Image (cartoon, rainbow, N blue to C red; front, side, top):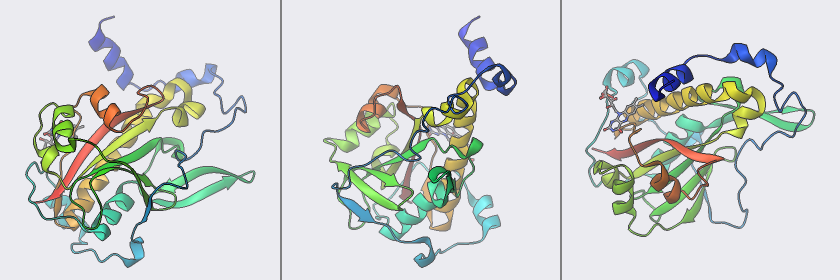
Length: 251
Ligand SMILES: Cc1cc2nc3c(=O)[nH]c(=O)nc-3n(C[C@H](O)[C@H](O)[C@H](O)COP(=O)(O)O)c2cc1C
């Protein structure tokens, strides 16, 4: 089979094959954490709770009608409140579901197959009021932000890693979603991967709509250099790797 046939088949549902497969969950193997672990000693920034955020445009129909991809951004910074809203809208946790006294699933603002929620959100922050530039990770369960590191030549590196798409270097913040695949594989084994990719679409669509409601813009990005983005967010590229990006800014 050639590569196109392989890829077409990957797009098809293979959940039927799960009948003959004993997943790690069925084998009673330990469940992976609902969120990537983090060092409690690292620099943690409080985000604004959703209840305290005033949204400028809260008309869903208008936001859906106005949604489009933006590839030009101005120098206006995002506020921490706006960033908090975008993170909540794309990956916010509504509740953590417990089973047998263990955290079993998160219910979030977006859907996810089996509520496995395999994505982590990294932010390459360039222009957010009160935050230094650099790499951050969203702690969705806590609704906080963790500073990871400064990125030398941040602007040049993100443009290069997105294959020369210059607007990624002008954005106030670039959202980078990485997938920790075992979160889905633990339950769905070979059927996990298509579903995990579908999950990413919901995340980015909510980001688009949330951007509309704060007069910001975004543009989904699938055309990027896998190794270079994985190196910027410092993930191993096997158990965790980037899947989707979306730069955000005012325009
Ligand atoms: C999965 C996906 C990947 C995309 N990748 C890119 C990209 O790498 N670069 C880019 O400029 N636009 C990218 N786009 C944006 C599309 O080009 C855009 O959605 C399309 O032209 C329709 O325009 P609209 O979003 O304004 O309706 C992507 C969109 C999607 C959904």
